[in-house]
Length: 282
Image (cartoon, rainbow, N blue to C red; front, side):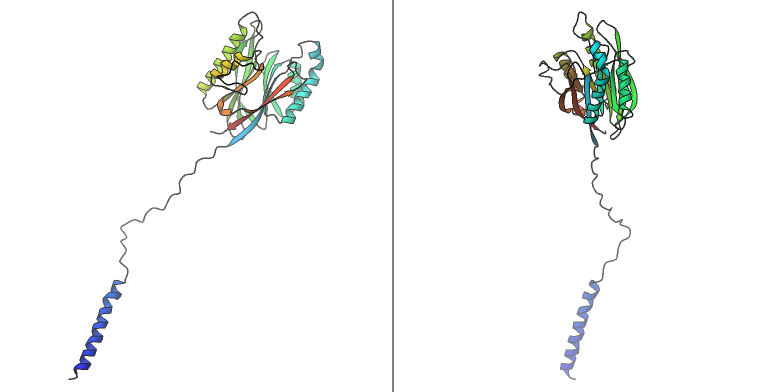
């Protein structure tokens, strides 16, 4: 018997058997279908984008046509000047204090389909106008104040929705009496501030603007800024500084800015006023 051949065959067989376990171990393990796969990754939610729109705001005393002979003779030409200025500045929203019936008629005729006019039904009226493509009328409230001799004047308060953002703004047009014998200016200012507070309490999602001829300097500035309204020319701490009698106050959410004064012959105040307001969706 040849031991060398036997030893060689045994070695070859041993090497072959040693390879078999390695091949078997390389096979994949069976999959357990009872274990659910992990859920797919979810992308983090993106914050909602707030849409904003800047609107041009305007206010002035219109000098009623029955003020005197000159006011009556120039009423038509003065309204033409006003409309030209509104078009040039692309005004979206505004207040005209102290207008007579013929002036309101002229505004509607000259403004055509561009602006809508909201009045209070008084002979001498304070009115709000708005660009039809910028706003739509949702509702109309009113406020009765007292005038020079204590007579009652109805102020219209149109509630408007911005057509781009859906934001809602209420506008109060003001013409308070001059400081004469009697408490009428103080009473009217108190009624206006009270209405602003009520609107903000009952409709916290609304924005509010008060503008017009207050026939006073620092008194309305202190009253409205202490009520939480924003002034373009005074802070609550500096409300006693002398201001124009034609003023505007807005809720802080409107971010009033861009205040500018334009000299004009269309009013005995010789000035019209402009500002920008920011309307944003909720």
